[in-house]
Amino acid sequence: MSKYPLVLFQNRQPNRIATLDEYRQSSGYQALEDFIGKRPPGEVTARIGEAGLRGRGGAGFPAAKKWLAVPADGAFPRYLAVNADEMEPGTFKDRMLIHADPHLIIEGMILAGYAFAASKAFIFVRPSYESSAVILETELEHARHAGYLGRNILGSEFSFDISVHRSGGRYICGEGTALLNALMGKRPNPTKPPPYPTLKGLWDRPTVVNNIETLANIPHILRNGAEWFKRLALSREGMGTKLYCVSGRVNNPGCFELPIGIRLSEIIDEFAGGLPAGSEFKACLPGGASTRYLTREHYDVEMDFDTLAAVGNRLGTAAIMVFDRKTCLVATTLNLLQFFARESCGWCTPCREGLPYIRDLLWRIEYGEGREEFIPMIREMCKFSWNSYCALAPGATSPVESLLTYFEDEVREHISQRKCPYNAH
Image (cartoon, rainbow, N blue to C red; front, side):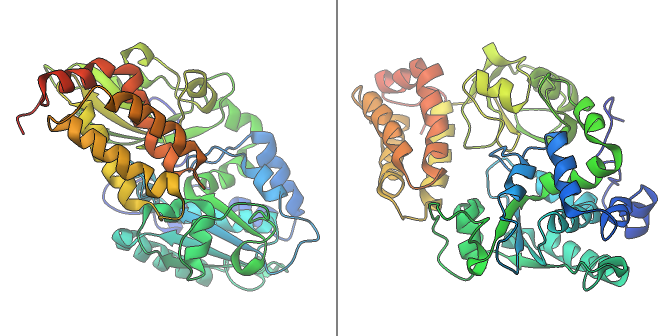
């Protein structure tokens, strides 16, 4: 049992999902019955805004603010695109949520659609999450039979339905505008606003893109109120709980629902079981593969959007990847760059050309062919990544930049010894 209250995982069962009946027994669909057709859509948005709910997919953008960006006199039909693609290395929270309590996600989607008058939603799932797609399709059918989806929900004038879309399985599809292009059957290149998707998204109609963890908070906020949601957090500016994924050199890897603002050290030492005997913490990535390394200096940092920003980092997806003193961070960073270079859509030069260039220099350093001049070259190429069309390239170079910030001595040791001091290649 967790010493902190469980909200998103309150119905989590070992090795099975919570059924529709079990969800309803925990007050599931109560918010839907209280709001759909009985209270104005604007009240849903207002309550979510009061609670300060920020996006849980990585960017941390306020959910209510995104919904308000849909013009009141905007075109119809309107769409909700839900990102469950989850291609970020180290991140598996969305899969765990789907496999725990799918109706919580479904109810949150319906309420979000009601807030900005959407009539259709798509859940964007990657092919390797086939079991998640099957769960969602099965439970969506149960929700339809119960009257929660389809035409005139619960006898109201509001009609809304949800489809599961199996994506092409590329990391770039997680970028909001690339996701919309992929849904429409186009090449998943990002597009730069204006116009924003909330004005012209899917098929040139207003579209909101949210992460499933974001939406899963909505029923709880509407039932319990904004102040309750804020009190769940431990940090001063925090709101709610967060699903933290922990992997790497820990005894108990997993996905844990914990308060926003909990300290990194508590997550690793208590919930993830600490490092194996004989291991010593060296660094971690706090929010997935596109964040910067945190060192021992930041071991007690509060895991919240603003507190991590204060130390030059991001909460991202809150996927914590832990590395011990025996881990070569040059090899680790090279592995990440290989992933990001492969997943680039190839649209813009800083990403298409820059990431393979950095990857090649890191490969040479790792395998004994490095030279001193490679270090300033890598730094310069990382700066160029910020001129890219979307956030993929700056995210990809975040671990590289922090490798040179905190572990330049390790990089130079590779160069001076003309080999990796951790491994015999």
